[in-house]
Amino acid sequence: MKGKPYHKANTTSKPNFKSGPRQNPKKKHPAPDRVTSRDSAEELRAGDRIVVTIKRLGINGEGVGYYRRKAVFINGALPGEVIKAEVTKVENKFITAELKHIEKRSPYRMDAPCPVFNICGGCQIQHLSYEGQMAAKEDIVREAFSRYAGHENVRMKPILGMDHPWGYRNKAQLQLGMGKDGMIAGLYAADSHQLVDITGCPIQHPKVNEAVDQARKVLQRLQIPVYKEKSNQGLVRTIVVRFGFQSEELQITFVTSSDKLPKQEQLIKELRLAIPGLTSIAMNINPKNTSLVFGNRTVILWGGDSIQESLGDLEFTLSPRAFFQLNPLQTVKLYEMVRAAAGLTGKETVVDAYCGTGTIGLWLAPYAREVRGIESIPEAVEDAKANALRNGRSNTAFYEGYAEELLPRWVKSGFSPDVIIADPPRTGLDSRFIEAVLRTKTKRFVYVSCNPSTLAKDCKDLLDGGYSLEWVQPVDMFPQTSHVESVALLMRDV
Image 1 (tube, rainbow, N blue to C red):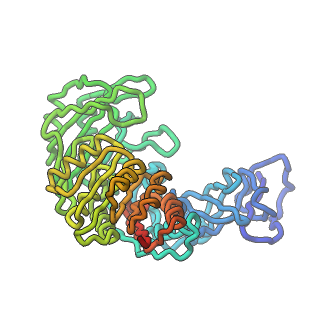
Image 2 (cartoon, helix red, strand yellow; image 1 turned 30 degrees about the horizontal axis):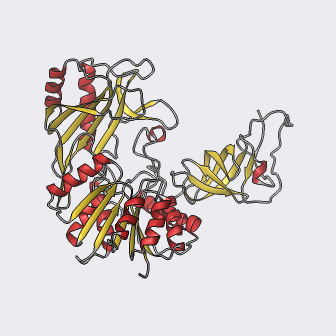
Image 3 (tube, rainbow, N blue to C red; image 1 turned 30 degrees about the vertical axis):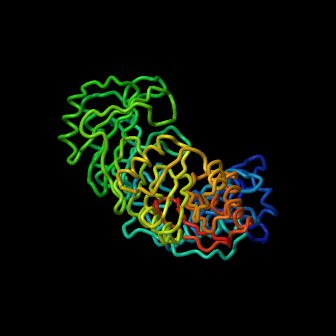
């Protein structure tokens, strides 16, 4: 049946109808082989067909093009491609559309090696070669500064990538469920409650994949029930596996709805037989019907209460719930760029805001006179203090609180930092913290960001307040995904 034709973007040509039966104006179904024009993007409707040239990747990995100067977001499309797409939604400022056909293919497009790439949602750009990923991520950062900071010619260093951008994740946190062929360990597909089996995930370390698979098989063999959210029945919710890249120790944690674990001794015995190198088995109890993975209580079933890991010469003890970077190899590169930006000579005082468990401050401590970390989460502050003690970083101190409150208090008492480092969550810096930094007038401000958009917006405020942007260094912490980390150095005359 014939219907609405495609609409070609960025053209003023007259409609190009093919011959055929007269269309019924009441029908809304588009004919897949027709292309025509709209006078404006506002005339588009869901179901219309358009042709779009993709200019760049968006922050979520989607292709971004334009129809009549209005942004069009198309999942799966790559920069440089010409795409036939079907409009799915028209908003005030943008259009979303579904890829239907690639008219011009990117030379960087490849077949994704993961069989569930299109449905898992954990990776967004496995279909883009690594060379293409590096270029696209640099463009994401550059576009963010252009759009949100009005900085068209930001000095950006070449992105730091990986020699082998696979098998880099040291931790898996997978939900359990039942499929037609038995127990599944996986992730929920985007915008759904469909559990996708990700056995053999190519971005997880092989040891992690093996441990998850063997643990799943043991649970199934022993018929230990999986938790079912709808009925609030069953036991095991989640498997969490962490592998120490340096220590080669392996930790498994089962998140359960109850502290009553059937066949516990048999479970421990079979796990130890099935998983070489296993050093710790734990159970975390989370009885609440919540989206939070972990509960408040953890019980060690066998082995040590933690595993060991290191970054450079720093050593860490990781309990089942402890935070640690997911890509240790790239973390070292990231922290070295932070050190370069800080410009330390051994005489400086440093404030590490949003310090978490203190890893950045501890990394810098040997090169500074004094490091003060600030973190609002009490457990993270305790971990930071323990990490400092373990590593002999006696010139560090960690404080529970908010940087926007503690920093002005310290300055008022006579403490004036030479360098401030901030590594905030994706939402960026608190506006009160930015005001505190501007009042403090610290010479060097080093911004570590996992979100280019909020990085650029916050930098705009700092630039307006008297800082200058010296350079930005993108770091690829998560290959095959659209995420990109950055280190930005801002300076001002004191």
